[in-house]
Length: 190
Length: 301
Image 1 (cartoon, each protein chain N blue to C red):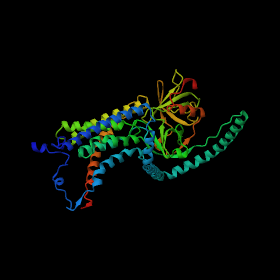
Image 2 (tube, one colour):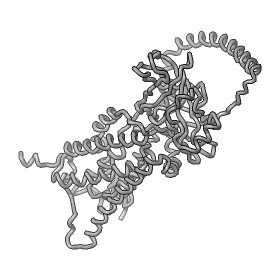
Image 3 (spheres, rainbow over the protein chains, first blue to last red):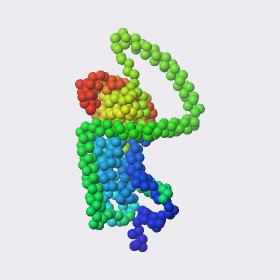
Image 4 (cartoon, each protein chain N blue to C red):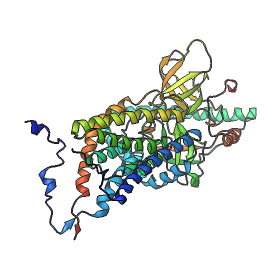
């Protein structure tokens, strides 16, 4: 029973992963395997151009959530400095003062590094808690920076957005896990 | 899952330096972020060209989703209309008959107005709109309230021009690129609009609170004369917004003003009209300062 409790709960390291069921003359496309994480995060930054014209901050920071999900699923896939290029891309569209995502995403990657260092074993709930803490800090600081940019102390209007962010994180996690399968589809003939 | 860390890759100098370099780039990234943030807090337009280029790249996505929003809304409306066609038909027929009579008298009034104005030698320069555009995006994640429209400098849109929808004021243009422009919505806290009450011209100003509502403040101190349902329109002072455009409706009164609803909800607006800057003097002032629409001065009203 004690050994069973030590099992990882994300279901990532199953026997199926160890022996992938694919023909031996096929391999994942290299550009898809390397580029899909970047492309998916950049695409989610474009949520600004979604059909919703919002009069309040309502949509969770999907791009950062995807970044954290990728980081938790595949710790070594994205380089630790990924906040510089992807944050700059997000800043182009988010409406935040330019530089806020560069700074906060880089700090989030650093924080994830510390979390990795501290906790040797991680489970789903622990991942969720870590992401919740990081995203909460991100939302509050980003709203503070927006208030600075507007030169007017913004009333904290991020309550609904914050709740939705916390609730949606497992869904984003699941989406990224699905994308990870697409990423490793054996499409290239050797 | 188990951590997979390889910060100590053995005796390979190359691998060790590689890992070290990653952290150096991370620190550089943080420094770049701090510097860029400081620059853009100091000068909000510092990275406008970069944002403009980004909007140009992403505009097709916005066009597609604007079409999707329109057809989605149309679909819902069509299904809803199908259910109460008969009742609505009767009501509309009655309304049209009433409106026809009103239209005749309104035409007469307009005619009389024109003649009276001619008598008083009031020349009102006709200001044709600069462009008609679609809202193709909004900053739904950030606490700032910007929207993006699909008309830019190529169609004569410039910073400082007012943007209105069918129901009322939307905001003003703050940044432009050749094919897109960024609009500061009136629900943003940085946007202060001088207004007057539609009934009696009671002056005040409107400031966004970034949560979809806006704060209405009065210039006169004393008793709060506002009631729920009062409509505020732009007063034209300050020279950016043309007078008489609906801005807000009072929802709940407060001690020093009121909290209002937007007259034109950007979410329900398909097309917007970009209006020319109302007064040339304000255009000159705008060139001098980016933040031209600060709180309206007391002596302006």
